[in-house]
Length: 111
Length: 113
Image (cartoon, rainbow over all chains, first blue to last red):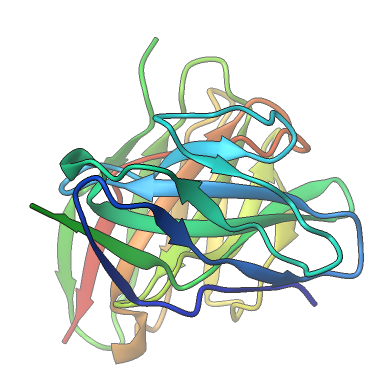
């Protein structure tokens, strides 16, 4: 069975400080990992996925299979980054794919 | 292009009742997945529908059932509601079953009293 762990419920940083949101996973197959973000009063939306290797809004995440981690990083936090962040793993069961989410980390960026 | 829409936005039901939640998928998307998000938790996969058939199910009892219609919209039905069913129910649509870029609706907040 697959599992996603986000150890921090809340991460509070100052504006301009570096951010690292931790995510660890367990999965026997080849993982496909995502970060989803939910801004206040908005729907859950995809931030980035590991296979695209993009940098979105200054965020990056590298899949480390040895450490089974997919930490989300940003060098300089902005106020607008304050949101709920969910790490998710995609698992295939037959022809279906499902996302397994972590419990989320609330990022709070203060002045 | 329209996004994923869910109705109603909020709902209060009594224990033992039945409820139906609705989801319109994003234009062109043929796969709909439903998730339950309890307070303080991440979304949990309930099931997925593709071409009007259930195409994968999470660890939820049979009283959670669904439908997908020819226009790819979907319903989630929950029978014999329990207090623990109180949660935010999210619908997500995608283009193919194995295309895991899911687009989420705003959710329906269900409260069971």
